Image (cartoon, rainbow, N blue to C red; front, side):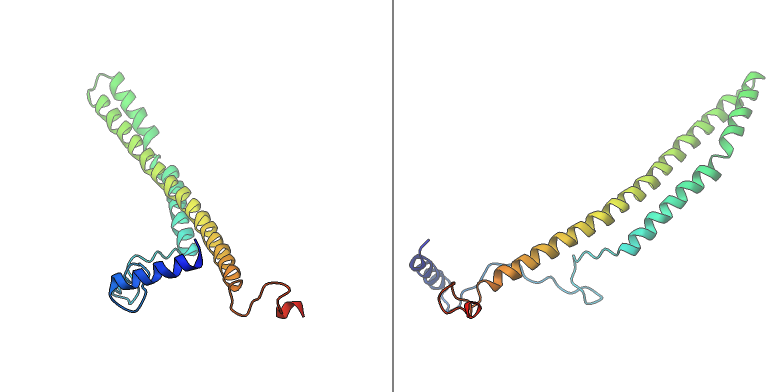
Length: 160
């Protein structure tokens, strides 16, 4: 696009708006939240993620050590009761099986939370680094459009 075309498009846009100012399209700023911050701001503290992940890991370990204690003895009691002809043995075995299934589901959830937060922590750090690199690249590019800059050989201060 030639410079003349750009200038013509800008003037046509101003005429369509009926005003003398050009406005870029953008979203309005979100209303401030109760604490004065904007809604929708995602704040991820690495220490907070680490604490939650660590708590999930500790809970997983405790569940394995302490909540499974009843399973072997319940299974043994259910087997003994069943072999002696008591219907209660099958019921106790059912309860024991359900307990173990629910316990495994809870332990899987703890492991999932721990793993997800570890991944989130690393991904957030990578995202922050990526944004920082791109922002610095934009600043470098923007500096190239500085009005004081001239093409090489055209009395550029750096050429002197």
